[in-house]
Image: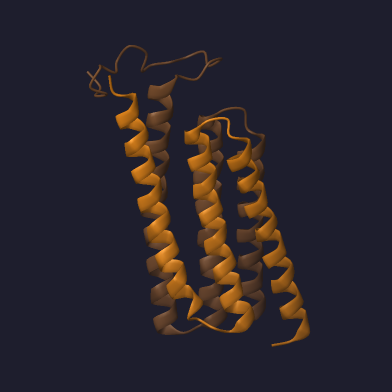
Length: 111
Length: 91
């Protein structure tokens, strides 16, 4: 049982490390957000799952599940808010398609 | 807890710490505020991972309550920063 927990925790650590490497190595804000929000959330969720298996206790599992659900709900919202601000500050250069070009008015709302 | 489990958890702790250092490298490098906030968000996720691993290592589930608070503060902080940055961009 402990080894199942350690395996889950190791996977989570690997994903967190990958997310951090992505944040350092990726070329612009949007690709960095892609790396950090997806891989980071999965890594943390796997770590929390590992802890749930490790402790194997009802109340603790509920608490870990709460953190996990909260993380999965909030990480995309935060990444979206940041990407939106990043786009408003300056659209990505070097991308071949920009479907939002000219669609944001002065009030920062889509037409 | 067997020595193998303790060693394994310590190694994982170090690896997550490395992830946190890498995230902070992006906070230092920038180049602008949205990048820094994004990297800091990842650093807080890594902090949550550190707390979880530490709770396992010390067999102290109490650290998980700290994790709840860290996750909450990180989200509110990121949204607040995003809002502020957007206000600054408004004409």
